[in-house]
Picture 1 (tube, one colour):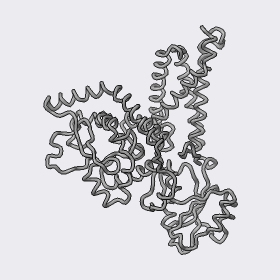
Picture 2 (picture 1 turned 180 degrees about the vertical axis):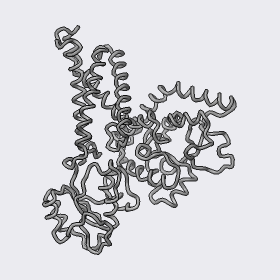
Picture 3 (picture 1 turned 90 degrees about the horizontal axis):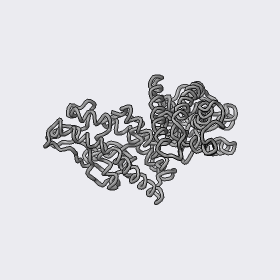
Picture 4 (picture 1 turned 60 degrees about the horizontal axis):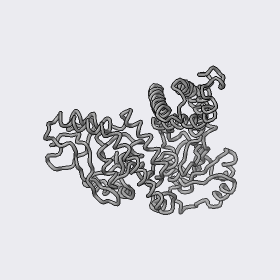
Length: 467
């Protein structure tokens, strides 16, 4: 089951885990103080000052832990790592949180709490997470937490729901059956229900919480009266495309129609949204470029050492930006100078032989993308958005893939929703799959969504995902 928070759908089980661990991290600081000072708050040096203002420190520690876990994808319902991968992410996240918390508590005198307390709180938080996530792994797939869904339709459209295979996409709902619509060519074989019983009766008998309308042709016998009866009985009625968007985090192009985009929610471009986006780009861009400047200097030096002092460090490439306007994208050069000596644009491939040794390392760690921060500061790009493509590829893809130009209604980004959800690829099919995630971002982009994507990008960088 999903709940809507700040305009975005979140799995109820994940939200409960997040809330439980937030409280646990907060309490871990109090427990650490008691353990560190042998259970007597009165024996703490400067106890009135420390204990009286302990809650801000506990709140800050909890926030740091939560952001660290979020950045490693440990609150992502789409996390598909195995036990060893989850353990590695958990350890890395805790170590990063411990380092950040220790630095803040040490550098800011008001926040001083002692290294022993921070260490004990971190250990307590880690042990608590082992317990909470063990319980979570047993509960998250229980049907009691899933939304019980009845699908009206059993044809091609309904088959798109039956065809959802990824466990992460099916985590929030349970299909209790399919009700064939009149005149449909049935393509769903399992879970068929008798339409003569009536939708309202089926919803009551099967304890349905949502009806998804997935008819192939709505001009034939659309059950307005029955759906209205279900809605008045407290059962949600959802269009198929909206349901798939919500559950899979992408917009299905094969069933997309312009009316859904015109009359649906989202696609916000109001002045406040544009202002928050630009403020985030400038603030975060300046911070990142300042922190990353040593790595950028080392990257430039490494390129010179490998290919000679006359070799260019930066690579300028024409890309398509906002509203289809082209701009020059900047990157550290990761390929040979003669990578496209014939002048023809080529897709990059996995283990591309044109990539240099230094370039391979930069591409793996995403250091080659850092000069794009200059594009962000110039307003040509945003930190978060669809990845910009070359004009030659855009012209070809727009002819073959419907709604491709719609991704240019927002600024392109250094990172994006598609980069988090889909592995690196460079073919027409990959572009089609990524476009579905890009359209989801274009429709649902908010400041909170941008911040979430930026935090989860840390997992991509630290663990080398996506390339």
